[in-house]
Image (cartoon, rainbow, N blue to C red; front, top):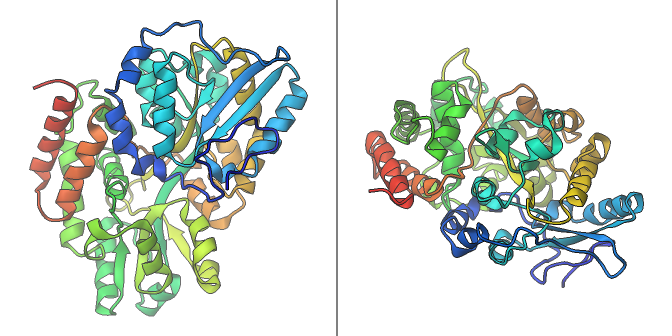
Length: 451
């Protein structure tokens, strides 16, 4: 059944009552990466720059909001009603798609027609759309003061050459969820370093328990684990951003990438992970943990929502989360964090000013914090992060407030698919670190039209 929202003018036929994990952004990144070369993006550069949502029959400015963020299914309607009551000359039309598979072709079609919605989820096209003049530079439109409350890692993912083309809506952070009862039974401490993790894994296997589950099917979770290792090896979160965009001389065959790949290989060969990581899906990984077959699960900040819905109540009450181990004792616990959900604003719409008003309204601190808490979502701002109520999400958000977020979403042309396939091969034992780094770089060069 198609469900609309009070106060929203339109809901996509592909919408459903079921929630869609923000994880779908990454699971569909290969689709997004392929879209970078699609005619929709290219033709948009030559589109009529006077297009826009226009006005309603009553002469009100129309702001079209397109996304697939159903975590706030119960919040969008009241938010829009509140905004329209305070801004009677503006109408917001909320179009909620069922998933990124149905969303991205519709967005590309609108861009190809020269008429993108006023506010839209940029998917993995945020930087490319910004460079093409489709997305507005929000640093210019909203000012640096507006942006400074956002976690640096979520701002960085949407920034290129000093311009920021989107805002994080929901952050997503990764950690290791674990069962403290199993740890107590095998007399294991929470690992501080990767070496410690290998020691703990040995104790768990001796007790007949799987160690840490890394569910790399369909292939993006391996990147979520691996890419922050580049930041851990370098202590520089900007390095991966530069590698992804192939700028400042940074390439995938950088020595720190090889170091990170060697660390991943060491963990795989050392038995840190449950067997057959490339064949384990996210639901399977979660089940292994809450049924007691595994002691740990590397996964993102949507897991508390999943556990509440699916896991036994006693497990939900006792499980905990640890930050990913550090490269070495005393080093920083860099953890994967960026915004799996974000919003861009059309540069070309006649109603850009009205769209920016709605953006500012929905990010006002008390309102935004309430939306995130009511939907059990992780916010992208420090002020809202300090108000997170769920204890596990609160713990994970504290890592971001401490500045430990590292990039893990690839936006560069050719990067995502090439890196995911190569890392999966290394995890499966079919490739070595040096050749993996070289292969990713070669694939990216080809995707960009080089030799």
